[in-house]
Length: 207
Image 1 (spheres, one colour):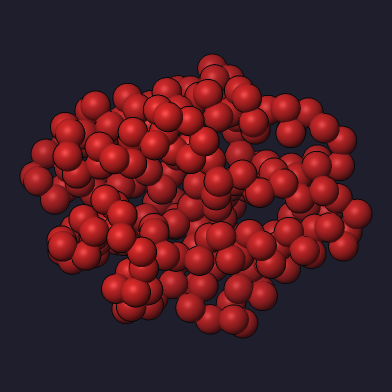
Image 2 (cartoon, helix red, strand yellow):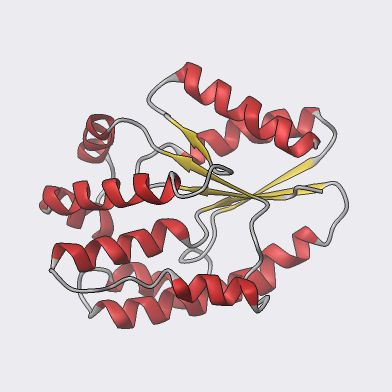
């Protein structure tokens, strides 16, 4: 079954809201939808990752991130994937973070391309391979407006203080989303686009 659906997107891109709407539709189909906020959420190590963003050297934060992601995959994702009639909706897996790292390298004029790392982890079954990647990408102006009204956090504050960097991250995520025709891209600034995107995901699940 196509039961591991990953949602990627920049902060304030509508991932959580879209997951909630999709969960309701999935439950109507007779499946159990499990929302998993993913790495950097449940462990002390993951929380340190968020605290260190913008403060410590990027190689250190990358180590925190992948360690926590592997733990999350082992302890949360795989057990749910082993259950019958269960679909995991993952709020970020690795694309949103690796694009962030790559964009940060572009921002400081250095090579921080680490896309081969999660690829190797998936190929060696350390990370679970997503059944489908969904990219929530509203208009950039929508992101800026939502970011301006969002909560204080090290990541959001860094974006607000560095609008040029925010744009670089956004553009890199758009490029990554368009890398594969199998990805679904949803403009979450439009209710109609969200509905159409959810319908595409439901069609994928039914295959």
